[in-house]
Amino acid sequence: MDDKDLNCWVITEGMAGTENQCIGVANAIGITPEIKRISLKQPWKTITPYIRILDKYSLTNNSSDLLPPYPDLILSSGRKSIATTLRIKQENPDTIIVNIQDPRINPNLFDLVIVPKHDPARGKNVIVTDIGLHKVTPELIAGKGQKLNISSPSAAVLIGGDSKAFKFTEEICLNTAKQLNKLANSGVSLMITTSRRTSQNNIEILKANLTANNILFWDGNGENPYFAYLDKADYIIITEDSVSMISEAIAIGKPIFIIRLEGGAKRLNSFHANLKNKNLVKDFEGKLEKYIYTPLNDTIMVANEIKKLMKEYRKNV
Image (cartoon, rainbow, N blue to C red; front, top):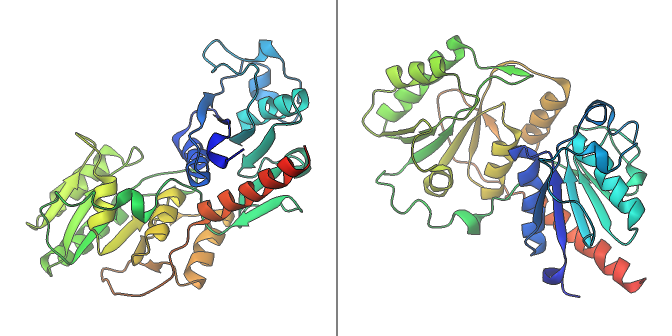
């Protein structure tokens, strides 16, 4: 059986961040997965995955069809997906199950577990990554920015917002806007996009203070220009709240500058420190500079490990 002939399910609770990691891995393997989204009733919603009592009555009517025939491969992510994935493995041991992100239970329950370096899970079947998994590759974004009427040098500015760990305060937003406007006035074209986490107040602060002529500002209306911005940019500037956007930018290989926010968390601080130590990113202090690094795409590495696992499995069946 070729990899492209594999039957693969992606099982998550439907959050874009976790689902896209699984889809990215499937795409890197060379397969198109079926997307299965989990929605659990109580008490399973609360107790899973630590008490793994799960049957057909645990799923809401909104859950995707999770009935046999089961696939060759399951890529799962997110706490709510774990019990369902393990139940399928129990019913059909031939299904290879790969969990992306730390499941917070024994990794040996899975065939493979993929965790970022800042998560604690370790073991013989645990693959540790430097960055998050995703769908972005240079080939995916190539040519997407051709229609943008913007001159070089240019920078894509990817603005996030408040998260559990970070606060994008009005003070930081105002200072960032002034730095960006000064950069634009120095001749750097800016392509700015906000996200769902960006507060309306911070959007208004950015709009009011970004007055230079060579600025494109996308605030959520119309087609998302994210890939076009990544393609067109000579530099990438990102707020530090988004592991996924930073990871995607590192796969492109362009100089990356991080806008520091208020707050932090041990795991995320470790993530950023690791990237800085490897010279993959630099802090944004109002200036840009060229630097070179080897683009890093852990998604491809993980896909290759899964291919090896599937190959070994086929030999033994």
